[in-house]
Image 1: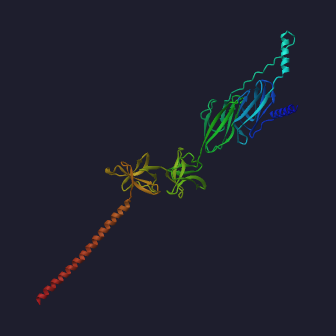
Image 2 (image 1 turned 90 degrees about the vertical axis):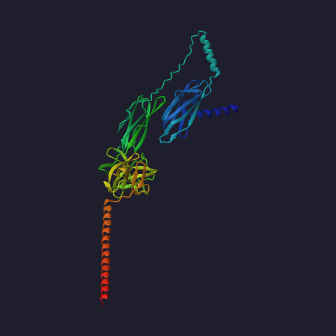
Image 3 (image 1 turned 135 degrees about the vertical axis):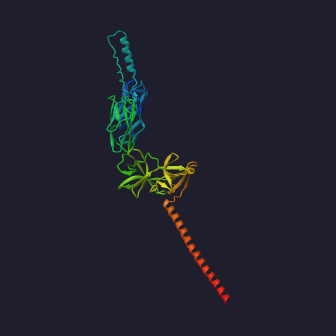
Length: 447
């Protein structure tokens, strides 16, 4: 007697446990029934403070869909087995809470299958026997409702954006698109329509943009839970708002250096131009400041900038000769000729450099260029295109050369004049002394 009471108590606790939903930190599941008849159907509900995809499986039973989309709540139909217990397992696959935290984990719920009593079997047997004997009594046959097949349609019929143009043009079977915009566009709105009205869509609406690549995903979940994702890559290019001039061109200042190759020895910094912060690169050892600029043809590159004069000096270009790096610069005043060397363009490696060439045929393989070395020193260099070498070259200005010649000539003439005077003085002195000696000799003879 006591054993029966204890067993009934434990069975009641078990039944009560089946009726209470299984709670988890991120989602919960609940069965619509605690016990079912053999091969009958019940519903499992899923509740969560978020949305996403959940996989559903059953032990000793069959689920209507192995995957279900849940947005706050969702459900799936389960058909139990013929005896024992049907256990349903729900697993979060791709779900996120409304607070943007991921939803993970698995939960199970079990439903007990009723076992037919022997009395009912006897009654059923008697009824069957009576019916067989030709009695007017009849038996009722319950037909199982056919399961409605859920749609797997997860395509979009349209996808559009408020600003810009999709590339390629939209097609339901294409899932990747690119949009090119400039930084004066701060946001876009994504609008879509699913082919199946029963499909659910997420990832649409107003989206904020930043300079560079912005990735947005639109997810379409079919009625049966199958998923398809469309990806939009929105490339935002910086549009200049500040400008400088160089070589009769207007150059726009760009502050986004994310896609540039920063030269060795240069560090990113911020400088002021017209009282506005501008991103620049500086090499303190070389005393160079670089700005990332865009010309009127929308070509971009680094330029050497003089912070004291607020002036763009030249494009930033480097050449490598014998393992050493040189920066192509221009003298403050570029002469058309140096010591009768004609101005020309010289090719060093794959770069064209302004320089000067010798007129003499025997010096045709030599030229003069103006470069900055890695120590920040600016010098003239003699370039030998046959050997591919550089050597420092000292420029003597034509005026300096002419003055030096004049000084030498003047010095020579003056020296000759002084020497003539000295020799003349000596000559007359000597002559005077000689005459006096002769006169004294003859006078002594007369006495």
